[in-house]
Image (cartoon, one colour):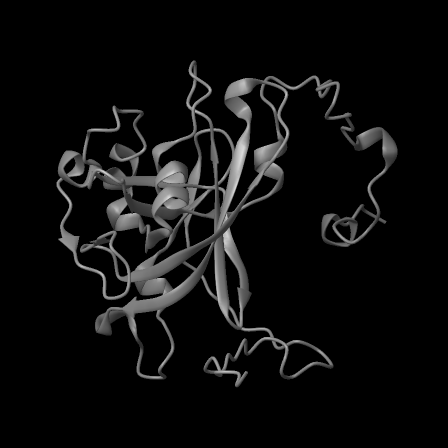
Length: 240
Protein backbone atom coordinates (compact mmCIF):
# COMPACT_ATOMS: atom_id res chain seq x y z
CA UNK A 1 0.00 0.00 0.00
CA UNK A 2 1.32 3.43 -0.91
CA UNK A 3 2.48 5.57 1.99
CA UNK A 4 -0.30 8.00 2.92
CA UNK A 5 1.05 11.46 3.76
CA UNK A 6 -2.25 12.44 5.39
CA UNK A 7 -1.97 9.52 7.81
CA UNK A 8 1.70 10.30 8.43
CA UNK A 9 0.73 13.72 9.74
CA UNK A 10 -0.82 12.00 12.77
CA UNK A 11 2.02 9.56 13.38
CA UNK A 12 4.89 10.21 15.82
CA UNK A 13 7.96 11.56 14.04
CA UNK A 14 10.89 9.22 13.72
CA UNK A 15 13.94 10.25 15.74
CA UNK A 16 16.16 10.15 12.66
CA UNK A 17 13.91 12.78 11.07
CA UNK A 18 14.05 15.24 13.96
CA UNK A 19 16.45 18.14 14.43
CA UNK A 20 17.23 18.37 18.14
CA UNK A 21 19.54 20.89 19.71
CA UNK A 22 20.37 22.19 23.15
CA UNK A 23 19.68 25.90 23.29
CA UNK A 24 22.62 26.52 25.63
CA UNK A 25 24.93 25.09 22.97
CA UNK A 26 23.02 26.57 19.99
CA UNK A 27 24.09 23.50 18.01
CA UNK A 28 21.14 23.26 15.62
CA UNK A 29 23.32 23.15 12.51
CA UNK A 30 20.89 25.30 10.53
CA UNK A 31 21.82 28.51 8.69
CA UNK A 32 19.54 30.56 11.00
CA UNK A 33 18.39 30.07 14.57
CA UNK A 34 14.93 28.45 14.36
CA UNK A 35 13.53 29.34 17.79
CA UNK A 36 11.45 32.36 16.77
CA UNK A 37 9.81 30.27 14.05
CA UNK A 38 8.81 27.67 16.64
CA UNK A 39 6.46 30.04 18.48
CA UNK A 40 4.24 31.55 15.81
CA UNK A 41 2.31 33.59 14.89
CA UNK A 42 3.07 36.28 17.45
CA UNK A 43 0.74 39.30 17.54
CA UNK A 44 2.47 42.65 17.31
CA UNK A 45 1.90 45.14 20.08
CA UNK A 46 2.26 48.67 18.73
CA UNK A 47 3.16 50.44 21.96
CA UNK A 48 2.97 54.19 22.51
CA UNK A 49 4.41 55.89 25.59
CA UNK A 50 5.30 59.38 26.78
CA UNK A 51 8.55 60.24 28.55
CA UNK A 52 8.80 62.42 31.65
CA UNK A 53 9.87 65.21 29.30
CA UNK A 54 6.69 64.83 27.25
CA UNK A 55 8.30 63.15 24.23
CA UNK A 56 6.03 60.62 22.53
CA UNK A 57 7.43 57.24 21.54
CA UNK A 58 5.89 54.55 19.33
CA UNK A 59 7.41 51.12 18.68
CA UNK A 60 6.22 47.64 17.62
CA UNK A 61 6.92 44.56 19.74
CA UNK A 62 6.51 41.05 18.35
CA UNK A 63 6.93 39.57 21.82
CA UNK A 64 3.51 40.71 22.94
CA UNK A 65 0.36 39.01 24.20
CA UNK A 66 -2.51 39.05 26.66
CA UNK A 67 -2.01 37.45 30.07
CA UNK A 68 -5.45 37.55 31.66
CA UNK A 69 -8.97 38.73 30.83
CA UNK A 70 -10.67 39.33 34.19
CA UNK A 71 -9.29 41.90 34.65
CA UNK A 72 -7.45 42.12 31.33
CA UNK A 73 -3.65 42.26 31.38
CA UNK A 74 -1.16 42.41 28.50
CA UNK A 75 2.62 42.29 28.27
CA UNK A 76 5.33 43.28 25.85
CA UNK A 77 8.98 42.27 25.99
CA UNK A 78 11.71 44.67 24.89
CA UNK A 79 15.41 43.93 24.55
CA UNK A 80 18.18 46.36 25.37
CA UNK A 81 19.43 48.76 22.73
CA UNK A 82 22.25 47.23 20.62
CA UNK A 83 25.70 48.49 21.57
CA UNK A 84 24.63 50.42 24.66
CA UNK A 85 22.86 47.90 26.88
CA UNK A 86 20.30 50.57 27.74
CA UNK A 87 16.62 49.77 28.01
CA UNK A 88 14.40 50.71 25.09
CA UNK A 89 12.43 53.93 25.41
CA UNK A 90 9.09 52.10 25.56
CA UNK A 91 10.22 50.08 28.58
CA UNK A 92 11.73 53.07 30.38
CA UNK A 93 8.75 55.33 29.70
CA UNK A 94 6.19 52.76 30.86
CA UNK A 95 8.13 52.15 34.06
CA UNK A 96 8.70 55.82 34.85
CA UNK A 97 5.25 57.16 33.97
CA UNK A 98 3.12 54.10 34.72
CA UNK A 99 1.20 54.17 31.45
CA UNK A 100 1.24 52.87 27.87
CA UNK A 101 -1.16 52.27 24.98
CA UNK A 102 -1.25 49.33 22.58
CA UNK A 103 -2.66 49.97 19.10
CA UNK A 104 -3.43 47.02 16.86
CA UNK A 105 -0.98 46.58 13.99
CA UNK A 106 -2.72 45.61 10.74
CA UNK A 107 -1.68 44.49 7.28
CA UNK A 108 -2.81 47.83 5.85
CA UNK A 109 -0.47 49.62 8.27
CA UNK A 110 2.48 47.24 7.84
CA UNK A 111 4.80 49.84 6.27
CA UNK A 112 4.02 52.33 9.03
CA UNK A 113 4.71 49.64 11.63
CA UNK A 114 8.04 48.93 10.00
CA UNK A 115 8.99 52.61 9.98
CA UNK A 116 8.40 52.88 13.72
CA UNK A 117 10.67 49.89 14.41
CA UNK A 118 13.80 51.92 13.64
CA UNK A 119 16.35 52.65 16.35
CA UNK A 120 16.27 56.44 16.61
CA UNK A 121 17.23 58.96 19.27
CA UNK A 122 14.82 59.30 22.22
CA UNK A 123 13.98 62.83 21.06
CA UNK A 124 12.43 61.51 17.81
CA UNK A 125 8.63 61.26 17.71
CA UNK A 126 7.83 58.10 15.71
CA UNK A 127 4.25 59.27 15.08
CA UNK A 128 5.67 62.18 13.10
CA UNK A 129 8.37 60.00 11.54
CA UNK A 130 5.76 57.63 10.10
CA UNK A 131 3.12 60.26 9.39
CA UNK A 132 0.60 58.80 11.84
CA UNK A 133 -2.29 60.54 13.55
CA UNK A 134 -2.28 61.01 17.32
CA UNK A 135 -5.62 60.49 19.03
CA UNK A 136 -5.99 61.41 22.71
CA UNK A 137 -6.63 58.61 25.15
CA UNK A 138 -9.31 58.84 27.83
CA UNK A 139 -7.65 57.39 30.92
CA UNK A 140 -3.91 57.60 30.24
CA UNK A 141 -1.54 60.14 28.75
CA UNK A 142 0.04 58.33 25.74
CA UNK A 143 -1.79 58.92 22.45
CA UNK A 144 -3.38 56.26 20.26
CA UNK A 145 -2.58 55.53 16.61
CA UNK A 146 -5.53 57.08 14.79
CA UNK A 147 -5.24 54.79 11.77
CA UNK A 148 -5.46 51.65 13.91
CA UNK A 149 -8.91 50.08 14.54
CA UNK A 150 -8.35 48.93 18.14
CA UNK A 151 -6.53 50.49 21.10
CA UNK A 152 -5.80 49.28 24.63
CA UNK A 153 -5.14 51.89 27.29
CA UNK A 154 -2.89 50.35 29.96
CA UNK A 155 -1.59 51.15 33.42
CA UNK A 156 1.81 49.76 34.31
CA UNK A 157 1.79 46.77 36.68
CA UNK A 158 5.40 45.62 36.78
CA UNK A 159 8.49 44.44 34.93
CA UNK A 160 10.18 41.05 34.83
CA UNK A 161 13.80 41.22 33.64
CA UNK A 162 15.00 37.97 32.08
CA UNK A 163 18.57 36.63 32.10
CA UNK A 164 20.57 36.95 28.88
CA UNK A 165 23.71 35.57 27.23
CA UNK A 166 24.66 39.01 25.88
CA UNK A 167 24.06 42.50 27.20
CA UNK A 168 21.89 43.65 24.28
CA UNK A 169 19.73 40.49 24.30
CA UNK A 170 18.52 41.02 27.86
CA UNK A 171 14.74 41.36 27.75
CA UNK A 172 12.41 43.26 30.06
CA UNK A 173 8.81 42.02 30.14
CA UNK A 174 6.49 44.95 30.85
CA UNK A 175 3.08 44.00 32.24
CA UNK A 176 0.12 46.34 32.24
CA UNK A 177 -3.54 46.23 33.18
CA UNK A 178 -5.88 47.22 30.37
CA UNK A 179 -8.12 49.94 31.79
CA UNK A 180 -9.78 51.15 28.58
CA UNK A 181 -10.48 49.69 25.14
CA UNK A 182 -11.40 51.51 21.91
CA UNK A 183 -12.93 49.54 19.00
CA UNK A 184 -13.80 51.29 15.73
CA UNK A 185 -17.42 50.73 14.67
CA UNK A 186 -16.59 49.55 11.16
CA UNK A 187 -14.70 46.47 12.43
CA UNK A 188 -17.65 45.20 14.47
CA UNK A 189 -19.76 42.76 12.44
CA UNK A 190 -23.52 42.35 12.37
CA UNK A 191 -23.16 39.54 14.92
CA UNK A 192 -21.58 41.91 17.42
CA UNK A 193 -18.15 40.29 17.15
CA UNK A 194 -14.92 41.92 16.01
CA UNK A 195 -14.40 41.16 12.30
CA UNK A 196 -10.85 39.81 12.36
CA UNK A 197 -10.77 39.09 8.61
CA UNK A 198 -11.64 42.71 7.89
CA UNK A 199 -8.88 43.96 10.19
CA UNK A 200 -6.19 41.50 9.09
CA UNK A 201 -4.07 41.78 12.26
CA UNK A 202 -0.34 41.67 11.59
CA UNK A 203 1.75 38.94 13.20
CA UNK A 204 5.43 38.05 13.31
CA UNK A 205 6.91 34.74 12.26
CA UNK A 206 10.62 33.94 12.35
CA UNK A 207 13.45 35.52 10.40
CA UNK A 208 12.14 38.57 8.45
CA UNK A 209 8.77 36.92 7.83
CA UNK A 210 5.33 38.17 8.81
CA UNK A 211 1.75 37.09 8.25
CA UNK A 212 -1.76 38.45 8.67
CA UNK A 213 -5.03 36.75 9.56
CA UNK A 214 -7.05 36.04 6.43
CA UNK A 215 -8.79 32.83 7.50
CA UNK A 216 -10.92 32.17 10.58
CA UNK A 217 -12.68 29.00 11.70
CA UNK A 218 -14.80 28.20 14.75
CA UNK A 219 -14.17 25.24 17.03
CA UNK A 220 -16.01 24.81 20.31
CA UNK A 221 -14.11 23.51 23.31
CA UNK A 222 -15.08 19.93 24.07
CA UNK A 223 -16.48 19.30 27.53
CA UNK A 224 -16.06 22.93 28.59
CA UNK A 225 -18.72 25.10 26.93
CA UNK A 226 -17.75 28.18 28.93
CA UNK A 227 -14.02 27.85 28.39
CA UNK A 228 -13.75 29.94 25.23
CA UNK A 229 -16.13 32.78 26.01
CA UNK A 230 -13.63 34.75 28.08
CA UNK A 231 -16.32 36.76 29.79
CA UNK A 232 -15.19 39.34 32.32
CA UNK A 233 -17.12 41.19 34.98
CA UNK A 234 -16.99 44.75 36.23
CA UNK A 235 -14.47 45.40 38.97
CA UNK A 236 -16.11 45.45 42.36
CA UNK A 237 -15.28 47.84 45.17
CA UNK A 238 -14.46 45.90 48.29
CA UNK A 239 -15.61 47.52 51.52
CA UNK A 240 -12.93 47.82 54.19
